[in-house]
Each structure stands twice: as structure tokens, then as C-alpha cells.
Length: 406
Ligand SMILES: C[S@@+](CC[C@H](N)C(=O)[O-])C[C@H]1O[C@@H](n2cnc3c(N)ncnc32)[C@H](O)[C@@H]1O
Image 1: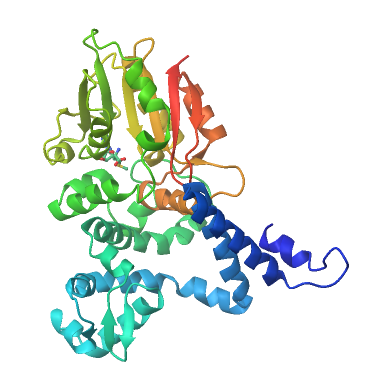
Image 2: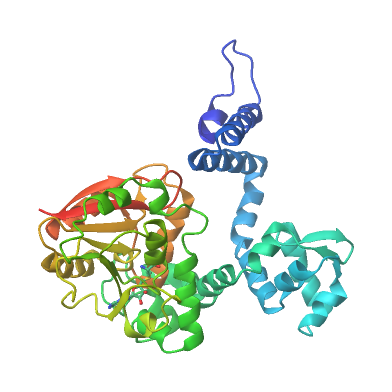
């Protein structure tokens, strides 16, 4: 039962008023119990949602507004915690560390450091062991991980000023879509004239942060090779006497998804191909047994007749018109029987998980683009000459679309 239903329904069957908190508590207890019993991803997501409803109901509405609009300061303090090496220092220490010790690592002012630590303790990214004495938590450990550092740097350093400007940008366009490679909010807010993907490539640190972000962006959600029946079918239906390429990872970054697939199915005979912009594949993951080809999504697809063309988080970077061009280039290269596998969020029409609802806005921030629902994907794919079958993930992660030429 949703929070609004519970609040509007405060009388029990016998007419006696009951406390809405009781129903919320029951819902949290039942959903946590279901998760503890089966350890299923969908139960974990349901339990988290129930717990969040309980937390929301404990906020006074007026105070909730403050918590909401002040919440960017949480990310800001995490970002500064990275600069001050608070997470790496604490996670390496077997003893609690003092404020003085932590401030000294980068020579920061102790009062500024304390102000940062106060917020980090409030969100569980460090623990206050005693007054001015701090210990690592599991979030401190997580923030000592290079992938999580890249996620925070990517979103904070390259995206936050655009987040602040999006209302102004959309207001100035009467809240309409503005198509064009360099006419979106990111170019507007950052004052850059170039395409974002070229901007990443123009600086080695930026390129590393952006590629690391892409490698980390699955988070702990299971890969499609774990939850979806399709990968095994694709392997089974491959004719390995045919000399066809088995799989092309179209704009596959440094090749992390290809490696996951190859680790899961080490006996596939056909070739694997990694395609991306030249400066990205130059840095492909170590030991990847795949041919690397620099290509352009908008030009002729260099590999013809592969068994599988796989694209993860590519089409969500582009508008419907741009997707049409990309899909047309792939369709031209496919042979009858080739599959196009698209890994993307498939937004439900109702009760959209917050993760993909927020991701949708991050796409607007960085790429002037969007996430799509099943209806929207079907339209985009159909207009480019494809049929589509949808596979939904067990939790709140991205789904799989199996597309074939009509
Ligand atoms: C969101 S990332 C996804 C990467 C990878 N598939 C993944 O899921 O981690 C988009 C990728 O598209 C590549 N890309 C952007 N524009 C491109 C273009 N015009 N031609 C080829 N690749 C491009 C970028 O370099 C980047 O690796």
C-alpha cells in the first residue's frame, strides 16, 4: 500500500482509527523478511522502497523540503572527502583517527575538515567513534575504490553545474526539446562548443574518469549474462563453422562488457570485436582477446553479418533522430538472423524506480537525451526497421531488448 493510501485510510475495519506508521512498519518488516529469506534482488529493491516510505513519513513535510534542497551538500562533502583523502586514509587505518590526523593529510584547515566530516558522519560515509575521532564504515571503504571515485568525479565535476542550469535552459526554450549535437544543457552551462565525447578525449584524466565511470555504472546490479536467458541462447544458436563474427560490442568503451561475456562463455569459437572512438579503444582493458576497431556510430558499420551486435548505454545518449541514424547503420550491416541486443533502462509507465528516473535526467545533463519506455523503444526501433522483444531485470537495473530486422 502506498504512503498516500495509508494516510488517506486511517480507519481500520472496525472503524477505529489506526496509526499509518503501523502499516508502514508492517510493510517494512514483511519486505525485509522476504529479502532475508530468499536474498532475491527484487525483494531487496521492494524492502528499500518500503523503508524509504517509512523514512519519508517520519519527516515533517516542511522539514522534508529542507532535506531535499540541502541534499547537494552531501555529494559536495563526499567530493571534498576524496580531495582530502579522508576515505583512503580512514580505510587503511586499523585505529580510529583524529580530526587533526585527517586534516593533516592534505594540510587542510581543521575546522573546514570538521565541517565536512560532520556531514559525512550524518550520511554514514564515516563513523564518529568519539568527539573528533573517526572510523571507517562500509561506505568509507566503498569510497576508497577507484570506480566509485570516478563516479563521484564524473557526476560532480562534469555534471553539477549543468544540473544547476537545466531549469534556466529549459525555461528559455519553453520546456521543449532542443535537438542538436552541441545545443543541449551541458554545452550551454559549461560554455563548450564541442561534442562531449571529444571533450572527454581531449584530456587524459577526463578520459580515464569518463571511461571508469562507464565501467562502474552497472553498480552492484547483476550483468545480463547472470539474469537473462538470452546470452546462452545466442551462444547455442551460433554456427561456429560459419566464420562469422560472434559479437560486436558497438561503442563498448574499454571493453569491460565484452570481457564479462567472454569470461562467462569462454568456449565460444567466433571472434569478438570491440568498437569505439580511437582514443577510447587505445586504452582497452588489459588482455582482452578481441579485435579493436575505431569507428563512428554515424558512418558505415565496418563489421558485416555478425551473429550479435551488442550496444549498452549507447542509444540513451542520443535523440530519436540520432538513434534512427545509428540503428540504420547497424541494420545495413546485419544479415538475416543477426541479432541486435540493446542493454538499456526500460522505464515502466508507472512506479518508475528512482534510479532510472534520475538517470533519465543525467542523460539530459550530459547528452541532451533521455531514457525510454517500452512503448518509446518500440517506436524508435520500428521506425528504423526492427522488431523488438523485451526482457526485464530482476531489480531496478537496465533491461535487454532483442531486436531483429523486420
Ligand atoms: C555511455 S558510453 C557507453 C560505453 C559502453 N557501451 C558501456 O556501456 O560502458 C558511450 C560510448 O560511446 C562512444 N561514442 C560516443 N560517440 C561516438 C561516435 N560518434 N562513434 C563511436 N563511438 C562513440 C563513447 O566513446 C563511449 O565509449
